[in-house]
Length: 193
Image (cartoon, rainbow, N blue to C red; front, side):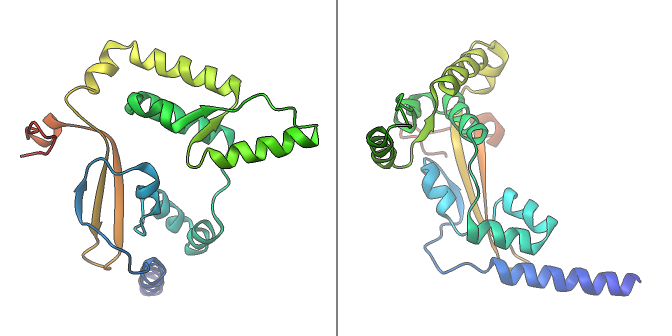
């Protein structure tokens, strides 16, 4: 039984590695600062979310990668709150409130669809969710302990590497990396020495 299990695990690992072989796009190994969110998510490498799907089954991973994921209002609220906490200066550029269109009227519906297209990669929230988002962000930012953790570092630090065993491109994103976590000091131009 152990031999069969080992063989099946090995086949699963080989199949998973084959599934993860990405198209050859430009790739930079290492720590990447200031990578826009959309650029990070466009990278071919597997993330922790992708790894979790593979653990469920390679079919689940393939389905998510080829069919896309349904984005829920809760996911949008979470993303907007994340931006508000970790990148408050970018909030106004990345998050917008949906105007109050009357979607029962054909003209308003067309206007709403046109407006959504103009928002490109921005997170669009309902008025109610925007209010919730502001309240959550304000609550976190008012907490002294939370704010101490968000000092002396950089938000949204991307990590890119190629797995040595399978040759698979991997990626991860740290919400906030404090300089003290690395034991390094940033230079005046923002680079780390």
